[in-house]
Image (cartoon, rainbow, N blue to C red):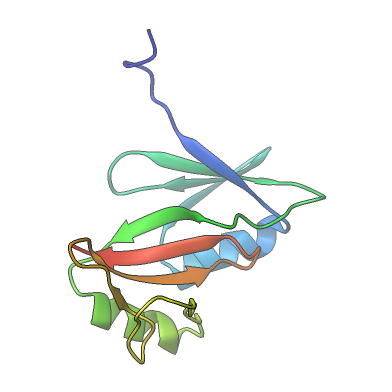
Length: 123
């Protein structure tokens, strides 16, 4: 019934303008403004919808993951654009904030302007 639908994910932000600038300019994503919010057009063909919410509370979990080929280079590039990487107690992270989750991916977490958690990861 739903398997053939073009499903998409979404989450709230507190300021659409800041979200547009961050996702478009800082992260370099294809962003489309829509009447009810922003559409992030992903390279996979999928999309994520960001919508404004007056009483927005940031997600306490990772809402969007970006697989990358070179996590060190990606983290360095984002750091140059003033993106700060999160540090978590009990997680072994290097000086850049990259965690090796062996047997899982190498991953680094950061927040969008609304405080939602995103990540870059390398298999």
